[in-house]
Amino acid sequence: MTTAESAVAPVVTPTGQALWPRRWLSSRLFDLLSQQLVWWCAVGLVRFGHSELAALPAVGLVAVAAWARGLSVLALAGLGVGIGFAVDASLIQIGTISLPGGLDLGLAASWLLGLWAAFGVGFGASLRGLLDRSPVLAFVLGGPAGILAYRAGDSLGVLTITINDGPWPLLTIGVAWAVAMTALRVGASLILRRGQVRA
Figure 1 (spheres, rainbow, N blue to C red):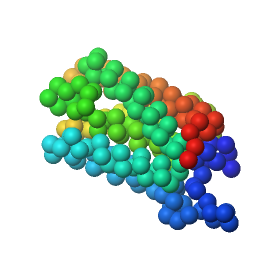
Figure 2 (cartoon, one colour; figure 1 turned 180 degrees about the horizontal axis):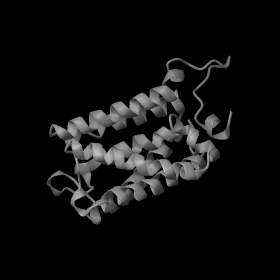
Figure 3 (cartoon, one colour; figure 1 turned 60 degrees about the vertical axis):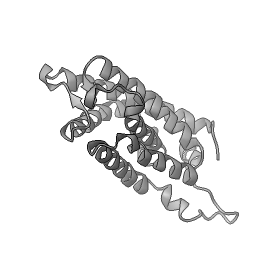
Figure 4 (cartoon, rainbow, N blue to C red; figure 1 turned 45 degrees about the vertical axis):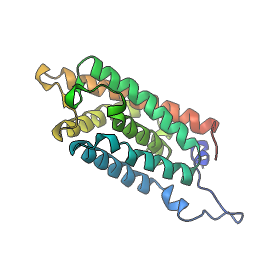
C-alpha cells in the first residue's frame, strides 16, 4: 500500500477488518458513481431554478467521504475549492465563460465551488491512480476533461461559453483545466503523503 493510499485507508476494527459500509464508501467505484451523481444533481437544480440548493449534493459527498475515509478528505475538498475558485473566477473575469444572469462567482454560484470540492475529494479515491503517475498525465487529461465539462454545462444552460470568438475560449478552458488538474494532483499527493489531517 502506498503512502497516499494509507492516508485514506478505511477505518478498521481491532481484528483488522474494514467496517462496512465504510469499506464500500471508500471504494473508487463508489466515488466515481457519486461524482457523476453530484454533477447531474447540481446541474439539474441550477437548470430548474434552485441554484441556492445546488451545492448540497457536493456537501453530502464530502461529508460521506470524510466519515468513510477520514478527515484528510476535508483538506482535499478545500484544495479543490481553492483551485476551482481561481480557475472559474479567472475564466469569468476574462469573459471566457459567464453564468446565467451575469452572476459572479459568489454565493449564487456556490454550486460550482461544490463541484470543485467533490472533484478534489476524488483524488483520494477514483482519481487516486494519478498520484502514482507523472504530473504530466494530469496535465494532458485536464484539458479535455475541462472542455467536456464546460461544454456539457453550456449545452444544459447552466453556464455560457463565448464560442463566438473562435477556438480561443475552449483553448483557454483547456489550458486552465490542465494547470488546475496538475495542481490538484501535486497538492493531493502532498496532503495524503504528509497526512496533515487525520481522522
